[in-house]
Length: 193
Image (cartoon, rainbow, N blue to C red):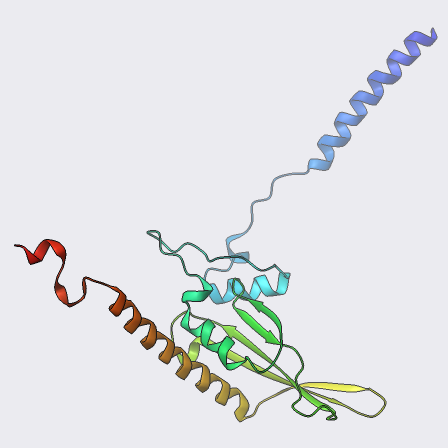
């Protein structure tokens, strides 16, 4: 064989080998199983948090052109107002979670708390919020112990958020009624008729 034939044979072999390698790496198509995809919003939020999905801007579309933005959700706004005394670590509207940074009201204290609020619903309901409070205790050698605590703080925060959300909703309803020229059942077309 001549060197030209060897080169041509090598190129053909390399080309065929490359195609086989590329096709082999593609694998087969395996559609996702329905039981692996959560149906309800709470499970979807939980999966998104576990997978570490990022912040979404805006909101998701909910039929007929209605959008649910963070500024129009009374529960979200109320929670942010209630937690305004502590710095936030995470505020992910798309994932439905607010997590504060570690907070202590005394600078020399070895104890601090972290608050996590999971939103399970956009409606103003007691079961629409899941609140967890974590307590961190550090000793003099900076060894820290963190634990989930069950105390009245959880319930106090939940009640404060629900009350504030109800106030915000009432206030927004009044301002919309004041700004709407068609309240009271009159409209420009019905006045002259």
